[in-house]
Length: 344
Image 1 (cartoon, helix red, strand yellow):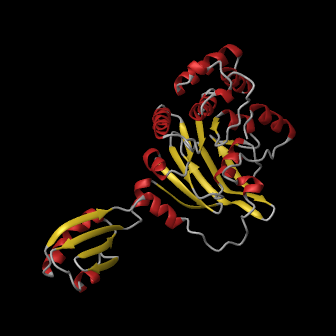
Image 2 (cartoon, rainbow, N blue to C red):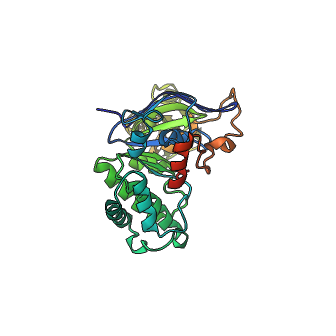
Image 3 (spheres, one colour):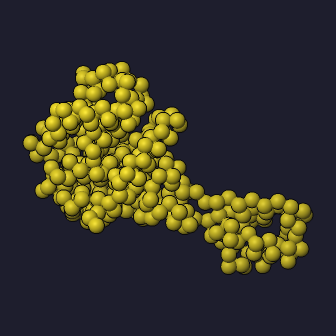
C-alpha cells in the first residue's frame, strides 16, 4: 500500500538555521497521525514543504507517491489544509470562498457549489453561507477553515493546531468530525499542543525537536516509557525499607513518616508485590494510590532543550514560527496560484 506521506532525510535551511534536519517519516494511508513538538520544532515548516509553500533544501518528500516538487499538482490536489492562521478572503461570502477554492483544483462551478454546501453543512455553518468571513465568530472561522480543507474531498487532511483558542465544546465537536472523516478513510495529519488531543485521536505520534525526529510511537507505547508512582500510607511510620529499595521493580523509593512513594514501570502490575513487601516488613497499609505517567510528562522529558550546533532564535522570522503561516518559497507560477488560494 502506498504511504500517504513519506520523507527521507528531509532538510530545510534558512541561512544558518536548520529548521528540518534529516527528517525521515512515514504516515500510512488511512492513519490518524499526530505531530508534536515545542515551538520552533519544525512542524509548520514540514507542512509547508508538503503543500508547496516552502522548497526543501535536501532530501525527499512525497504525498501518495507524488513528489511534492516535481509532481506538485498531483501532490497538492490530494491535500486539504486547515492552517493555524486565518487566511481567508474577507470580501466574499464564505460559500463563494469555498467555491473559489474548489475551482483552483479544476472542479466545475456546479460541482463546486454542491461541494461547498456539503462542506458547510458538515461543519455546521451552512446557515452562515452568505455571510462574510469577518462577520463570523472565532469558532465559526475555525469551522470554515476545516470546510475549505474538505471542499476538494482530499485523501490527506492536514490540521495545523485546529483547536487553538476554541472553547471546550467546539474542540470536542471538531474531534468527533475529524474522527468520523478518518474512519471514512481520510488520512489525517494533526499538529497540536494539546497532549490530550493527540492521546485521544492519534494512532501514532511523532515527536519533533529542533527539526529532528525524537521518536514515533503510539500514545500507549510512549506512556509505557515513563514511571508510575505508587503512594502508600501506613498505620505507623514506615521507617527504613531496604528490601523495597533493593527490589528490581523500584526505580526510586521515598519514605516520609507514614507515607511511602515508589516509582515503578507499571503501577498496576507492581502493587501486589509492593504490598507483600510492605507487610513482610511489618507495615499495615491503610491507603494506596497509583499515579500513572501522563503523555505530557513523557513529551516534556523527550523534548528537553539540548546543546545545539546552530541557533534557532530567528526561526520564526525565517518562516517556522508557530504563529507564522510560512513563506511562499516557490516558482512564479506556483506562487501565483498559492496567493489566489490564500493558503499561507
